[in-house]
Structure formats: structure tokens, C-alpha cells
Image (cartoon, rainbow, N blue to C red; front, side, top):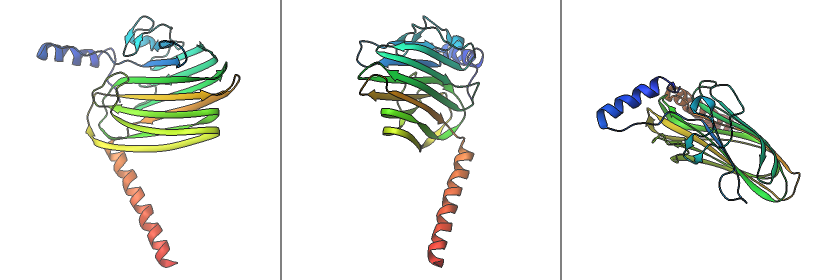
Length: 238
């Protein structure tokens, strides 16, 4: 669950400002795409509900319009530096609760590296863990990382799960991390770096992060303990 970007977040920000003389930024869903062989970040897209083109973000001012009209979805379709094809979509609350999802299709124009980042702030569901899942295909190399930031910063770095490198062909991976109970607000950030060695190579993937509630994590833990106990009993029987 996330606080409403137009109501609850504003009320909280106003209350903090009155009490402490400070203010909080509205929750922001931001997508960035960067050809690492060029200077500066090539593409910064902000969800239309969060301000759209011209909005100041943690990576600079957004310079491309959001290709999606749906609140909680941000999209870019076009060239990124020397990368001839890029279709990237980020999805967050209210479309999917307690989760952040990034999917992307990329074709290189030559040797190069492309970094794609998706971040959102203002998550408020209590949690004690982060679950990270990625799958896709590549003609090159893919590395990925998920980050949970209790300071609620755009592109913030806190508890991080690193995945990969994945080299050539189909790939998939699921990992989790635990931490002390977090009540929010907090942010989630996904980063994927693609390396290609020739023109015309293709990488596509779907990357998902979620913050299960403590009860769900407890059930998962009990399930794992049960599987371990059953495996021990089978070994003893045999």
C-alpha cells in the first residue's frame, strides 16, 4: 500500500511542515534510461500524475513525456543514445500494491551499455523484507539490483539485493532480504544494466520487487522450516 499522491501525502507533508518547519516531496514514479557511452542521463520520464515533463527528480529534470496516461504507470518508447530500440514500462501503486515492476525490450546499435532505473516513493505498508524476481532473455550480459530505502528518497540506497550477471540466453532468479520492521514511508528502486558487444543484439526482461507484510513473511518462514523438517525425515527414513 502507498499513500495517495494527491491527498494523504500532502496532508502528511503539511503536518510535518507545521510541526518542524520542513516539507516532504510528493511520491514520484520515475523511469530513467542512460546510454553509458554518452554524457548525462539520456531519458528521464516522470509519471504524468507526478508532474510529467519538466519535473525535478533525484536524477535531474524530466525531459520526455510519459507514454502512459494511467496513474501508476510510466512508459518510454524510442531511441536511447546509440540504442536503436527501447520500450520500457514501469508499474507501481495503485495499479499493483506493495510492488514495483519494470519490463523492457532493448536493441543495440553497436557495442555499448544501457542502464535502466525505476524508482517510487511513499510506500507505507509495514514490512520486514524485500523480494526480488527477474526473468528474461539476452544476447549480451545483464546485471540487476533492487534497493529498499527507509529514508524514502528517490533512487535511495538501503537494503540491496544484487542479481546476475546473466550471460547469453534465457535467465531467471529470485532472491529475498530481511530487515527490522519498517512502517514507512519508504522507497523502492530497481536498476538494470545491459551490456551488448554488437549491433542488433536484443535483451528483454521483467523485473519485480515486492515488500511482503510481516504475516506473509512469517508464513513463508514456517513453510521453509516445514520443508526442511520433511527433508530430514526422508533422509532418516532412507
